[in-house]
Length: 302
Image (tube, rainbow, N blue to C red; front, side):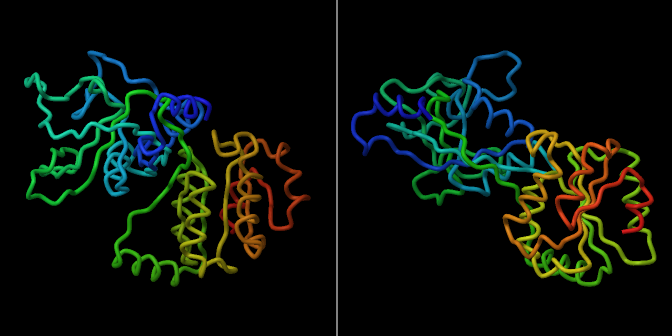
């Protein structure tokens, strides 16, 4: 935060600060690193796959659909986006076509002299990951914001999402409605043995839907979207440890998060399933809706 405050001192007048919220699509692991250490400063490297169409900087967009493109390109199972406060300062309007062979292009270059950032409104060129500056007659698809120092950025929110169209949403509602048992299984690294248990659960005569999830945030988002199914058919299974999601206390972090979100959800049965059963036994005494086991048979009996 101090970096952000100090950066404002060199910008003349609040009207020039241009503080905006920007989306950055990436993986969960990288998001946690950024949240801890901020974005890496841009560097020149022969190993770098993309030097940057509109400059060798850190990229954001105000269009979540565009951030989503990069999130899903890097992580297909559980994509996420970081929302950060981005201080654009005085932006250079990027209209040059990105071409490494053109000396006038911004491709791979630093910030334009006299400016604090680059800003481009862009049009898709076939692939959503290949966008060129809009021509005068074109309607933009997205925008791209490029800053060249991590002191211009304050990472603020980590957003998990699920892409569904209306048809898919209807299908999900039918699937959840018809299930006799709904299980949210929270584990960021599901083992081969546990994947086999998931298969056995789905094969039960009692129609069971098992929804793998990576984090407490993902569970809360599901509960909020499908709160009509937070009834006696719903069960939650969680592991003990998840990096960046309560760490050693991931199970209790999940329980507390659910209760904080909605006290009515404190009745949802939660099973803590882990090898080190003794380390989480206290949860059973502390929370009426929590049970603890290291036995796969208890999971299959849900």
